Image (cartoon, rainbow, N blue to C red; front, side, top):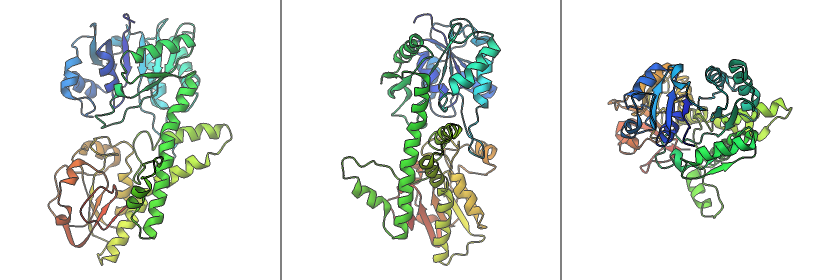
Length: 426
């Protein structure tokens, strides 16, 4: 495996940590169409905070000609000498929750322009079963003029990156691998096994590996939907849901899921990819889509509960001032993709309230671009009629939130992490 030169297509939350890991042992060219992103990484800085600057700077090279290390570029010429291409572009859904495969098509066209005989293209992007061979391979063949499984080969190894998690980093998470032939499957597996310390699992086919990825997060989605429904039921009964889950958790095989907002690029998206493919086969996936509806509706539910508490405390709703703490999709992470905190904010605004959003992690310019919302990284000084803790950033635990509330003000803890008195929580 000494002659391997890897190109990572897409340098986001998935691609960069993977490129950094491979670059310790192989020459790696990181390719991204975003020139600003490339410049930032070449200077040794990662705004996603997935790779520490010191770690990134230790592998960054000034030239694409190296024995090991990472060189980032948006110039197609720099990846022509590579023989392994790993695609790590996002696979979101549209406003009707239908899969968007355009990034995969575009990246496949990019790779197709430089593909050579003997090369291997590995996809890591989350897809439904069949996308790699039925959607991506035809693009590679058309652009390159080469024949699949004769001139070039493909593999699929689903990403398992957990943004913001500094404990379960890419090399510490067991990797599923697969290839378009048994021989290629073994080569793909050997490649990942050379850097993944947690080990690998070679799936018998690409479709099995694709299916495994979408059900990982669909399973979590369904379990969270169940406890979200429990939270709604127990709130009506005036029973503390977290106390119930803590008691039930004393049984050895009880699964420790908690209620909350389900966003991000995986759990909130992957089930729709599986549902789409199932419907193409004439099957309507009831449990999967019911879970999605439950979780997608939690933003509206939280907002209505906050408003209900304000009315009970004789607070005039229209024109009231509400502080929402956090807009990223998870705690201690700057990732705002598919965040459901936005649903809480929009629903609160629909009642005529004035909402201030404070998040020390999120980029205000990125939030403005993605959602058209203004946010601040400065702790607000004014008093609020309600405070909603939407994301469990560590900074919020150090704040005296009660002192920021007006008389009869409401404190709603979506994440159930505050030890001080709160008016309500999921």
